[in-house]
Image (tube, rainbow, N blue to C red; front, side, top):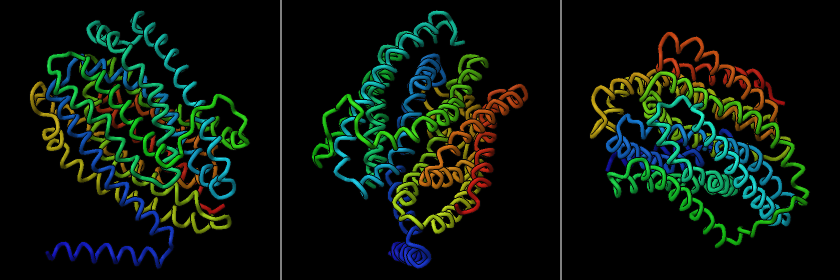
Length: 449
């Protein structure tokens, strides 16, 4: 067919131009294309899962309670995942080049450390969240609070499971194996199956479908590593010399990522104060945004970080030019996606959610919130490239201050916009987060070190 021939010629032309300009361009393009395909498959599965959730639950107390708990519990998992990706991928690249014999023992020690952290966080989170719900400190209505209390024992298992999933995913990414991006969709598959299999089970199908999905995701990561003899039994010591390099970036990255990811928690408590259904409404809009952000941003970060990290010493100037090029390119791509998204927002919400308990009026509300969240896209896409470049240079202090700026931007945005726009203001306030960060990174690394 003619269109296939045209597509092949177009891709061959791009490959030739990237190889001629700079080998890093082609490596990024190839990795981005691979990750984008896997991410697209995963996001389509996520979209199918959201359709099932909307059909079965709509904007109800069950969804409010589930999103409230899931966001709280996944907050430390997200921090851990971000920090591991930022610190472990460059460190593993250096180890494979200078001391590959040290990798197995460091893997086993890091495995043991992740088990301890996950178990400890699960105990602390169970006690803390249970107390908050019992004392009425969540701000949830009484019905949603009861549902959250019933769901807590199951969802708390996500902490140890999620910590191990993040660790194994980081090891796969550090080896340049992008299939872990495809495996990220396993939990969404199990959630959808659970809801369909138990149509009148209340919040339980959401809870146990999520737990089963995380467990199977972990298993799907461990089995291939075991077959490649890259899976060691956990060791609960920390005597590997690589810990010194690991801790150098870990502490400051924890602070920066905790502040940046705190914006989700801030939004959640603002949404709770706006009444029943607000958390669910914001959650549905954010799910569609996540489809867009994930498809582009995951592809960008997972394609660029290994390339920047594996570059030889003395090549930072070349890397800087590559990073600036892709930052500009992704900003323009973000503008295009934002404009297209604004036009298609009502159609997307209707296609994904409007069935069963999710009504036409719900579609209008969620579509409006979605449109107010779209202006963050150009800044977010740009940040992904610049963050990868900063991490490859081990400039962890920049990441910390980006977290400070992001958290401050979200607080300012919500304080100014929520009284004026309500839940739309929460979505629009995210522009302050990534706008501040894009400007900060651009000014901080605009000159090659």
